[in-house]
Length: 309
Image (cartoon, rainbow, N blue to C red; front, top):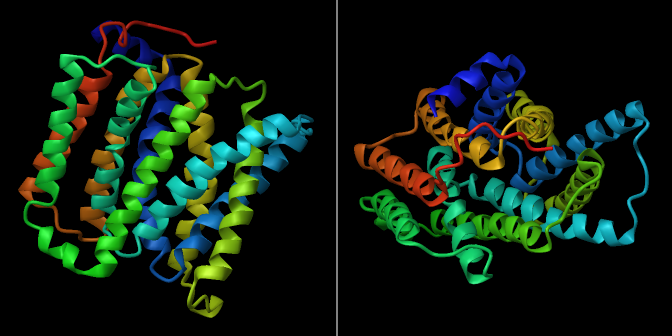
């Protein structure tokens, strides 16, 4: 493990890519919370994905790689976009209108539990005692989250926000399992991502006009607009490229383990910038959840040098 860590540090591009994923995705929940201060959530999500699609389109045209992917592949990308971007990302954005960014990031960190349990149900993975320990630790963390704040669920807006977050987790897990079950392979991930972003952006902007009670554009603050642009350029595009580059050097499990720092960064920034209250029980919950997810995913091979072609 130590030698592999030294290997990562010596590869400056890989180190930069992993830090980009950790830091940028760690700031995503904070940016969403700032964006929805004055911009309706579906507008934030829709503009974010649509601008990301425009950026991907420009990149593909510059590389001479833009082309039609075929109806069958388009169908795959639409389903993936529906689950991962419209449901998971969209509902997370809606939830942050009433739920703090620190709590959102911590609950969202539980998505690997759903992925693991779904994998077991579909026969993609075997259940083990180690996994049981990890799942129990994660659920213990969730209990600590709501230990003192259970009365807050009496607030219908807050309760709906929590409900939206769990829908988002189910969407993300379903999208991941969909990809694993079909063993989808991509000849050009950037091209597929363009179609995913474009579909999600268009659908979410339509949702914005249908479901937003007040979308007076004149009330949108520079602070919220800047956060939305940050989400499009860095949260959706830059982090993806960094993540994809990291996957060419190390295994997906290694990247996911290193990216657990996302949650820690998100909670810290929420406390530092938004002055969100972080209790001892909240910190304990974060430790339990992160350790639980690590235990679920841990295997002796994950820290060995591995290149993914």
